Length: 321
Image 1 (cartoon, helix red, strand yellow):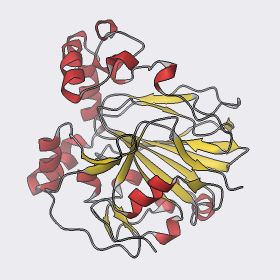
Image 2 (tube, helix red, strand yellow):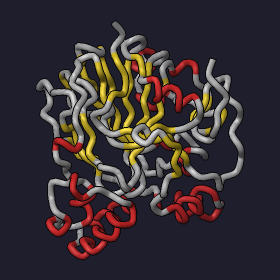
Image 3 (spheres, one colour):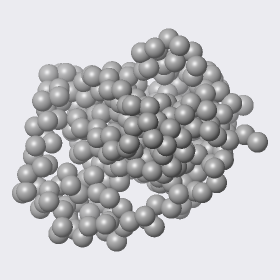
Image 4 (cartoon, helix red, strand yellow):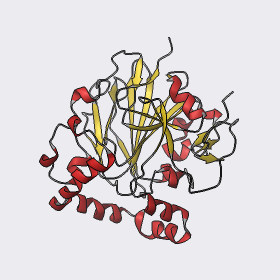
């Protein structure tokens, strides 16, 4: 049985207490490397609270922010040379480690170039054991060992609608009692995503849709934004983990999901899969039932109603013996 949630605003099991109704509560997560509960510094927090917590704001989202042209316009701004002036203040404000970047700060052509930055290989070591699946991205993660046991995703009564997400009855049934990890990338995070295991990927399939925010401030209102949003789906045949489905979600100001891997060629664990352009976004990793045992801290923090912060390349789960 799962323990009662300390902060049930994010998720819970069927045994979890109902979350509070206040929309003003902060976003708190557990940091794997500091072993402390921390409060997220939300980029654009004022706008997000207005947009998803105020009737007038929700109207502005429906009319403008979810539209592809809005994100295209913002992306155009972030591609302008003048946007370089935003880079250094952004790094300093959010305490990013510029020593991890392949490029020096003055070498980025524009803000989007910085946003999709490449890191030095030693900055994100890949757990080498073939039995270990790794997080596909830096971010704040929720892990659901058995999707059939959860009926409170972000708020009570919200569940993953696999049929709507995957748009295929057979796939939905395949993963109905499977394992899912939702990895949420904040604007301050490294915005490249990688393969969680070695295997052979199929060609990615793009599903069109609007571009709602995937920040918890929005998902607390409607988890369905995930499967309504534009997204890309890729199947990975992984010898150690069976068929893994990888999904990258677009979001407000993330209209561009670039796939950068060779199709129908074997890939290594941790190999680059693609990148997002400006904004926060999310990645979901779906395993078939019984193919992975999620890391203990990921399961514990999810049961407590908190996301776990961990970096790409670190252990997400282990294949059963």
